[in-house]
Image 1 (tube, rainbow, N blue to C red):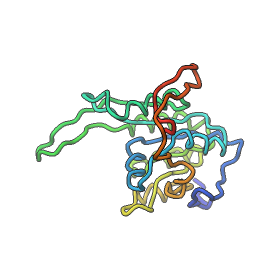
Image 2: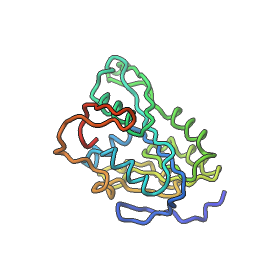
Image 3: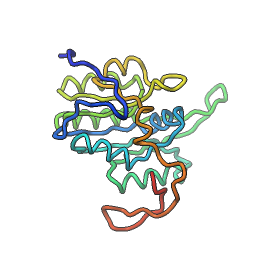
Image 4: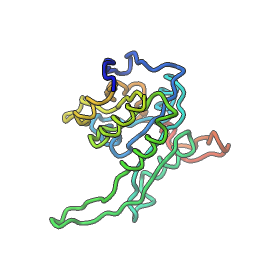
Length: 213
């Protein structure tokens, strides 16, 4: 595999090699991105996120992966999941179980790594760019496999937090690394956004979600 292309570390004002004609797929590891944003002290405005990458090429798919605890289907994440589903994202969820381990600690069993990997491999033949929002080192092999199929991979995470949120092996494997901290002004959600109904662009109805999800 040709790895002679230079890797870029870019931010909000940086230049990217993405072309307006490129077909792009976004893959968002919801739990990992949430933890990264929490470490950086801001929330993502998912409307702005989609618009930002639509300006860099043709977004053919934007996937959001998250688990939902089986006994908590009416959890705080449900409004976000519903909004994303109606506003340009393909939301993939999986029920998971909470349990107590042998040492008495509360654990959650289950993740979405396999589902994300399968979708990425299925789409690899139809896209030019893959943008992965995760710092999970388990995705290094997936990134390498997608690159072998001719897809350029950008990873979005951060090294600006007190503890870096991206595994070194994943950052090294990526063609480009975008530090989320540098995108705060572009993608950050207004903390004073009013709650109110939002127009569902596909069905013409309104749903009650924060105005700046």
